Length: 119
Image 1: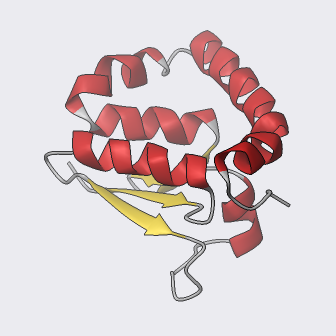
Image 2: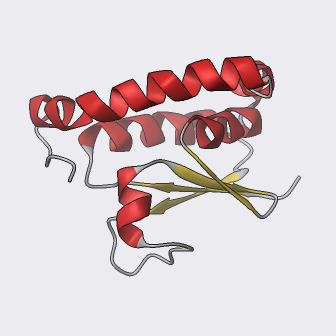
C-alpha cells in the first residue's frame, strides 16, 4: 500500500487535535501529514484551497472533503471499516453534507478553541 498524503491546517486548533489523534492511530505510519500553514510545505494546489478544505492524495488521486477523510480512515486499521463504508455514494453524500455544515461552523468553533478564524 502506498502512503497516503494528508494536507491539514496546522493553524486551526481543531485540525491540530484531530491530526494528533490520527497520528496516534496511524501505528503503521501509512500517512504523511503535511501542515499547509507552514509556508515551506509543498502544495499540489493553491495553498488557500488547501487551508479552506481538507485534502488527501490516495494513489495519486487528489481528494477533498468527506472523500479525503474517508481515505484517511481507510489507511488506519481501526477506522478502515468506516472508510470502506464511505465508498458507498449514499454514505459519502451524507458525510459530505455533514462536512459542509462543519465548515460553516468552523470559524466559530476555532474562536471557541482559541485559534484563528478561517477565512
